[in-house]
Length: 427
Length: 210
Image 1 (tube, one colour):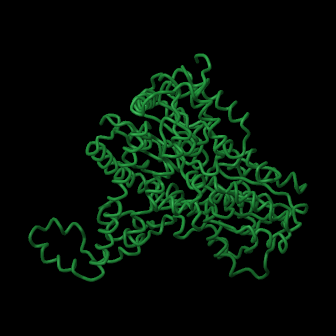
Image 2 (image 1 turned 180 degrees about the horizontal axis):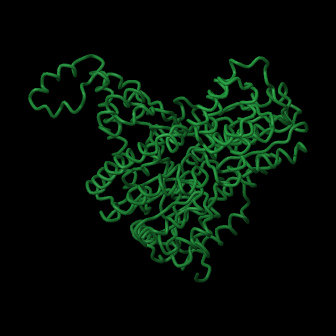
Image 3 (image 1 turned 120 degrees about the vertical axis):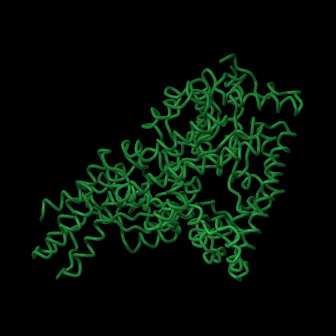
């Protein structure tokens, strides 16, 4: 690291366009495992924006103009390289008439509650055969009516495979006029419309932030999950999937092979259509503590690794959220091609991550949320300096909190953190 | 007590364990002996979990086997079997947070280590903890949470316990994915544990249990 420089002096007098160019390059260099001019810092403000703006979290989720105003204000105040608001948006979930697997502030939670997933056994053990035989048909006619109450009418549709029956299938179209089907399709159309509006806002938000000199966040991209988590999160639930490991391992493996195929088709298609060659993969049950290493080797890692290799082959960078602790599993991650993937680490020992994966992938994370909420300025400063020196060494590091959320973080500590990163992160 | 049944349960041989249970009961075995076998098997499962041989799939499957066998046995029981239980622990995931995996593991491990556990579930209001301390009279209160929002809920829960004049009669531990020493001090708890074994060790230390 070079000599210590005053944080404010670094960017003084630069235009927004200059800053955008420098910041985007800084993040890109780190992602490519190169050494940038200094350690980039990305702030995933999340609900902290509601706290700073004195509004409820519900309003933050649902008032896009206010959300954008608060994001811009916070970004200008702290001057990170890149900044984000909350990741999850309830628009399409609300428009579809609610779903059984998410809860948003003001909808099943108090206005200041925290977005949460509600896991359940939405797919039963006896559904495996149908899921494996024809995932799409099962999902539209059985699963959607189960998890989206207003899509119940879709259960009346004939098997989707009948669509391959050419002109004969036209005789089946009458059912689409049945009132429950009509109602379901109307809800589907409303959700699609709401999502299109949210997507357009997300694009305009990135453009507005760029005009202010802030680089696009690394969280952008297609969204897929490790096939095991795909089967767990919104289908079998934690209890169901853990029993499947013992009771029906062959079916679980067969289902994951199917999932891998269509997730890849989706991600590659999305990236090619948008030109954003990044895929975000948040991980859940692969963390230390959920399953044994032999189980991890059999059920979790093969399809996650295959997914990342296929994305890399398609010229796409996986940005993987290694949620939880991956300390016992870092050696598997070291099998990934160098400089082609990136990882956000939540509670793993970040110094050990650097040691094992420093020449394999760009590492994001490092700062503990608890320190920014309950620590002192001295502690934050000392930890930031250590992170810059050790995890930042040689590049390939993006400073962020361990999760893309900063609710409860004290603004004065965040300022110390950002400024110290700029001072001590200079290469 | 059947060693064969203990082994089948402890080794995750579900079908065998259920078949053995039926066979034993049909052969005139005492229902209480079956339950004792379950308890012995659960202790082994707990030990293997501590040694990192077993993980969540095994804890959940063990719980399932226990449930099925109990359902089989209970109608044949003549007297109730309130086994001897140790100190009381009150457990719950704090207000605003609905994560239950870590809490359930802690509950399981405390139970197999002889504690009497009352699990209040998830999203437990502050007032509910206070009320339950008054009626259930636990020696230990264990607060679970995963979200960063839980930091504040934990602090509020501990403050409410103190405001009700109950702080001196309970030891309070916190745990869950994002908890650390910093949050323990912030919340005003007595200790934090990073996993279920730490929770058991703390509860033993505080209650003098062996």
